[in-house]
Image (cartoon, rainbow, N blue to C red):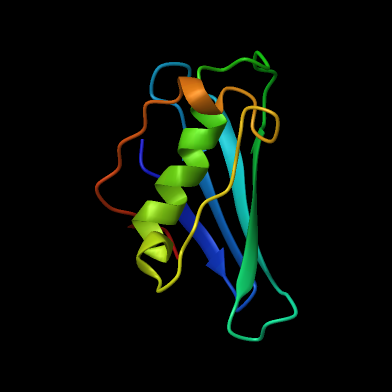
Length: 106
């Protein structure tokens, strides 16, 4: 399922996503924070499941965040670069993600 946008502020994007196979819901948050160069912004993401899931989730949490980034168009921002790894995001290399649009709930 495509993420449902919950709220947007200048520094935080929040959404939820429900897995169609397990019906588990995840809360997704992208947080923007400026760094030394005022033309650059660091974005960190969290995907937190409301129910217990296996730590090795075949990349589901990573895909949920990637869906939010792509669905919101953040990946089309000038200078966008992604930096992650299996150490940062367990299951990152296992994820097979696709998204076409973002459903806006608000």
